[in-house]
Image 1 (cartoon, rainbow, N blue to C red):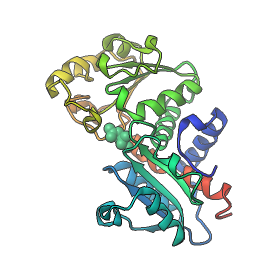
Image 2: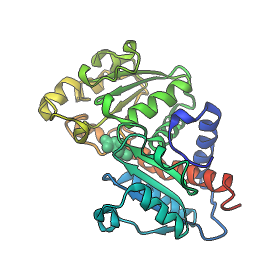
Image 3: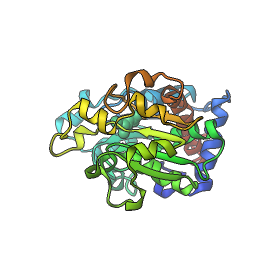
Image 4: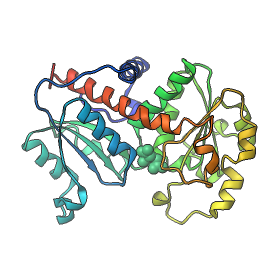
Length: 298
Ligand code: NCD
């Protein structure tokens, strides 16, 4: 694996191998590079969890992390993503984690640069490292994917998390359904995958909630926070209808009392903080796999 860009590029064997590696890290495996390898994280969109957990993963693997903040860089002087990456490559960076608002931003880079690219989220495209940590969390909980009912609720059309998870979970045999405002349902997904929220919640083993992606809406959302919560949020009443043993997930950042009742965020069913913990292990697995396969390190 040279790059880690999209779940669409991966088959189930590759996904399961990465999950196995991430699981091993979660059980305390230690692995460090034997020689200095320079990496940089370029976040053109805001991030807390993804950026910080990549940083922890990089440090735990012994990588040399270049401090790079878009707001203090030549991006502000008009430098393009392509020229920034070429610059970092010229000075010795071997791997870049990139988050960018443009869907498929990486296509302009991959045939023209030698360094490895890890997609930290592209617009409404994909978020494959989030997907891997979500899969790890589900696998730790249930031990399997085949036949599991996963309900993803919210701003589907704008969500890279929904897109990546939909693809990966379907490949692994899970039943994925969507709920939320009809207008935010992605028509490229099968129409039959849409389900009314109260029904969907009763059937689901995993209820995955999404933040409204306001930054990707052309017009501001037509709901007040309270309206959205009542119509499409995981309210305390809806949580009561969930199946025994079912869990709640959310990639974060959470807007309490909008997509989920505040009390449920740290409640018994919530795996939201477990997801964050697993983010480090998933990202260690991705980085290790690239570095070994590319023979950057042995
Ligand atoms: C998500 C993202 O950036 O796509 N967050 C994350 O990476 N943990 C979801 C979101 O921003 O709503």
